Length: 234
Image (cartoon, rainbow, N blue to C red; front, side, top):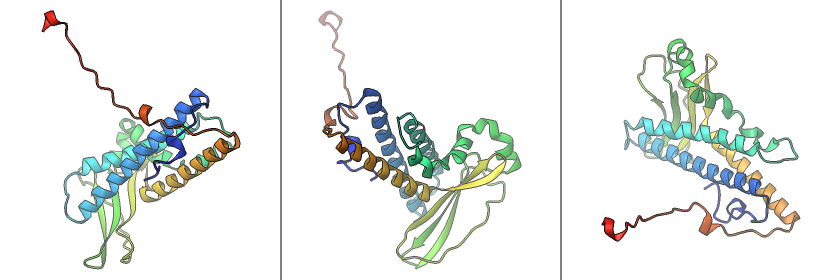
């Protein structure tokens, strides 16, 4: 879990300026979405690797592209905040932009993606699975559609009993060039950004002697409304 229940992002002071409060809470919500996406990516990849799930690739690619899209959304939201360090906090994850842009402008990249590179719209996923039973490392590739081109190079690694799933790569197209992004590393880099954000907020809150607030009753609420008809209309 990227954010603990005790995270400062879940207990923001009520006295901070409203715009800042809402942006920070939106960042908190985006972080939880990204965490949920990565958890589902790893779970589905593990099930595929163990032979427990086969043809549910649309769901897997949905989680991958949603993760990329929301990391980009996190960057854009953070850049709305007032900062005194030229937004250096988000520099470690800005490399997500190139791969994410393929997804955002997919309809404009038909020729370069499908024709020139013979690449499925949603790309290919590659990962290594370390099978504890056989003590072997297997390289998997998942194609988001019909395989009609070269699936690409397969790089094998040695078995590592300390790992189960290693190095999840998404191969896609950017500006007529094949490109890949390490989803596993992106998640780790994003985790570091989140920790830096929390540390920075805690420091500022301490410097200004602000009190953390319990938003539980007003955060991520569900509202249920019952319609009661007048007696004569029943």
